[in-house]
Image (tube, rainbow, N blue to C red):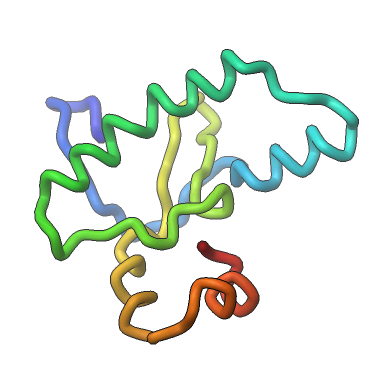
Length: 107
């Protein structure tokens, strides 16, 4: 969801600057640190409205590949969901969920 000039949903085809959520979670795990519950709540409060807006766009838009690998924490503190447009392509491949996880790292 873009804030400027007015709130809008955008599909952007460019490199997203920042750190993947999966990288940050791995760093926490390796350091023996459990992320604070408030961090998870912050993440959900930021990403759920964007996903709801995506769902409102229609049934052809999918987020089947949404994993921590596809969520990027931007330098300014915003969140970016990457490769969202490929979600419906996963269903077309006809892979079982375990195969998709093993081959692509997605659920």
